[in-house]
Image 1: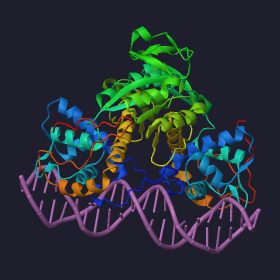
Image 2: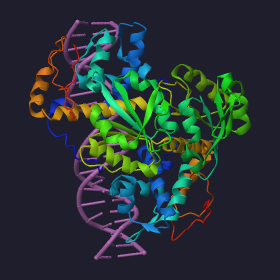
Image 3: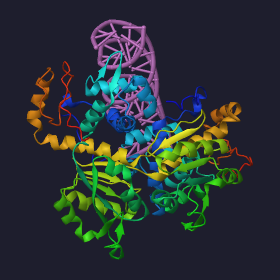
Image 4: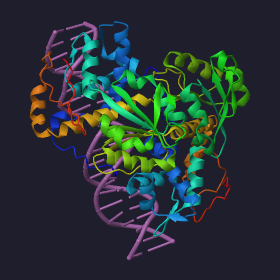
Length: 263
Length: 263
DNA sequence: CAGTGTGAACCGATTCACAGCG
DNA sequence: CGCTGTGAATCGGTTCACACTG
């Protein structure tokens, strides 16, 4: 977006591909499980299966971190847990604030997965005065008036936004102004931030929509062969979408075909 | 990945790239907002900004759907809303079940974004008998004994798993056996499913870890200019030095880091 | 002539396949 | 011999730049 140019050029040497970074937490989770079962070593094949990727990819990923394996043997679980943790910066403590303590915010506050990694929920913040003081996940909700102070006092650099969409941009701006440089956004809206601030977004309904797309196609596959031909014809601009090679069948136990859009 | 094999070979005409599919919901959201403001047309530039992508990508994406724009003018908002909705399969009704009504499950049940798209929460299911009958989001929680019947009765093909990690695989198997073919998994575990079943996963802590990685690097950047030089030198076996955020060491002969492991 | 639609160049990520090493 | 580590091939996605059109 306009925010463009985060300019990732710098320091080329530090080149761990983004796609690899995104998988490190996955490996870490699998390794942690192995570690808990006191498994001493794993092969790339085993670990890959546990993490849900293929082994070539895993080996390539690890090769960006260094040569941490032993040929003919595999990887030392504990050692790798440490290396990946360090690489991800999880050996240090990251205080985070969660803004917007509705259902989702509360779920996040209670989510064990944060604490178990290096994350510490430093504060729960909500704009509703009625929420103030109410305990959520064993911690009192604080009013958003306190936001700047909390961030500054705790040295928070990561903020989680779980507010309604309408409030998100404003909250974002306050967070950034107060010193936050990484934001995890659950609000279904595009945040604009200055350069140097990272935003990751999770949109629950987007995931479902992607599933629906594939689901729809699966349904269509039953009548696929002919649909294919229809699809070709469909390419016309015919405003009155009579065509629609996209069979909207829903298979299902009761196998009924819902109305296919009045068009 | 394991889920492989849906085999999307032929039907060249219907080939919408996965990356494009993943952005369609984003466009749809931006378009819906425009539609609500009664904006009749948008240019690729405007819409791209609203959706948080660049315009070339947007135009390319749309070109996979067909030629729905008007040169020199832009895109008709309403028309595009309809086309994208149809492409995503949102013009039909998708009953979904949510399994695991803890904090997160409740948040999902209450999440407006589902209903506003084509999704209808057909049932909330939990294994805890104490939950049974309790109303969440205006709907009684049902016991998991009912799972198979519910799915079958409602023709559910999409399931959402919001259980603890330990229960997820089993729930998944029951869903699949009962006829579900798309799963959105919030449990921090890798699900294995038979061919033909789609799984998408959302892991809240993974997103935070990715942010932490970048955050860490930002911190290092303050001393970056010199770090860059150091990085060059680093190519060497180098001393097993500081845990200065940088350092992608080739593991030296043994060069084992003194286990500073946080146990 | 503004703005879409798209071939072609580019770039990053994945996969292959095997050399290298314990 | 088994398994890692990695160059080379491949693939998919993004970006560029411009021909084309309403």
